[in-house]
Length: 383
Ligand SMILES: Nc1ncnc2c1ncn2[C@@H]1O[C@H](COP(=O)(O)OP(=O)(O)O)[C@@H](O)[C@H]1O
Ligand SMILES: [Mg+2]
Image 1: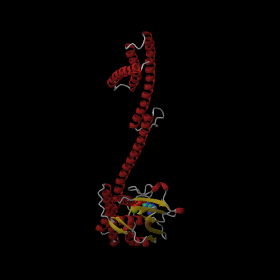
Image 2 (image 1 turned 60 degrees about the vertical axis):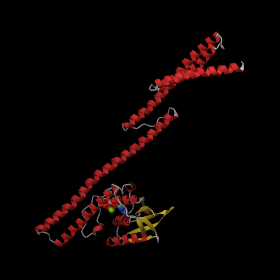
Image 3 (image 1 turned 30 degrees about the vertical axis):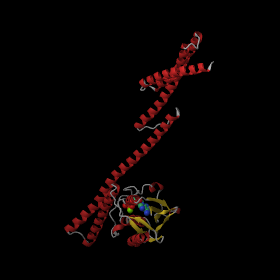
Image 4 (image 1 turned 90 degrees about the vertical axis):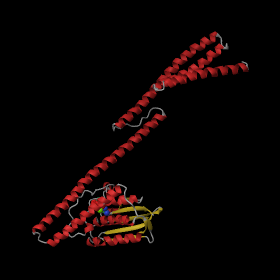
């Protein structure tokens, strides 16, 4: 074949191919909303017809004999049928695979669960895995939401309970005083004051919590010497510890300083100390330690350990939940003669600790001490 002929054939074939291709694109655009089955069929058909269009054009240029053209026409017709069949088969499979993903989405919408599809092309499988992952995250979020809702409901009933019991006591004592039937009016007055203080603390805690939860907490950050802060907290807790015969001790590394809101931080340490003292039996020890965080010199680790005998692993996740107080019955009225700050709270103490620490971009967690002697609460704060 002469070079000129070869070039001419290539040009004519390209022109015919372009023509068929453009028509194919136009049809594809017109049928773009049809099933992918038809798009695939179209691609296969266009491929075969491009060949045939080229052949026809070349036959028209008289490079092919009439006999050759007939042969090619028969072969091409069969090729078109085969191409269409293959395309329809693959198309049906794709339709089936995407149907499976669709089903997965539908079940997801109804809260059902379906393993990611293992068949189908890589993109569809990836989509299916992504969907399963999204569903898992949605389920987690749903469970968290339900837990929050549940604890909010519990909280309201607990607060109502925690208010009702002391209020009933206050009313009874006030009535006894009013009627002059109180045997020991002084004792009644003291108890009334203790109860009122406890209620005021409860309301303060609630107020603090709502500010933390609303993100309305304004931290007055300034350099704080942890040695001083811990000493003050220990001095504040000392009367309670003495009364309960709990030894208070600890160690703060000299010169340890962080930027924090001193009032909030004092409250964190005081809450942890009060809890530790309350859960430690007489003659036990409560210790506060403060040191640079191991492995991260830009954070400090403040810990309070007690002799509570260890927490149940299941409880360790819940102690920071709002209103959670373990299996113990809800707050009894403060026992007579207890120091005000010592009486049991309403399960808000650790939730406040957590909220304040997190507002400082810190973390708080609890671990059990070896041999189930007690537990240790850790506060990690950026310096
Ligand atoms: N140091 C501790 N040792 C053992 N258990 C603790 C300690 N601190 C807290 N807890 C448990 O976590 C619960 C929640 O504590 P908290 O939020 O301070 O509420 P409250 O002190 O009002 O009960 C407590 O009721 C107790 O069961
Ligand atoms: Mg407490």
